[in-house]
Image (cartoon, rainbow, N blue to C red; front, top):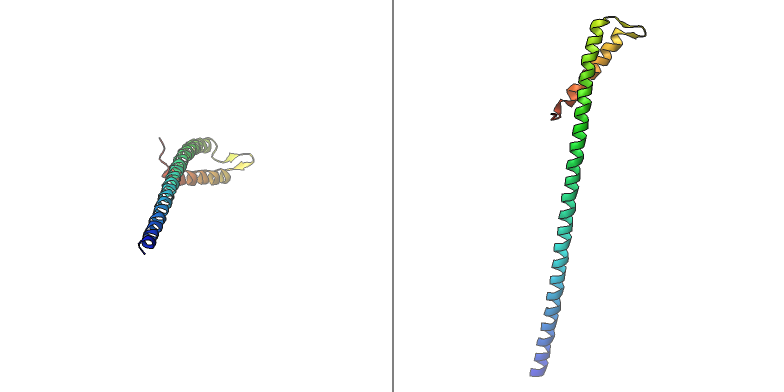
Length: 112
C-alpha cells in the first residue's frame, strides 16, 4: 500500500509541476499580449495626436484665409457699393455672410 500511495503522490506532484509550468507560460503570454496592446495603443495615440495637430494647423490657415477674404470683400463693397456687372451687391453680401459664419465656426480652434 505504501508503494501505491507514493505512486499517487508522485503522480500528483508531476501533475502540479505541469500545471505550474503551463500557468507560468500562460502568464508570460498574457503579459506579452498586454504589452503589445499597450505599445500599439501608444503608437495609435501618437499618430492621432500628430494628425490632429496637422488638421488644426490646416484649419487655422483656412480660417486666416477666410478672414482675409472678408476684409477684401468689405473693402470691395466700399469701392463698389452696387457690386459689379454680373455680380450684384446681394450676391456679394450673401457670400460675405457665409464667410463670416465659417470664421465663427472655426473660432473653436486654438490658432497662433
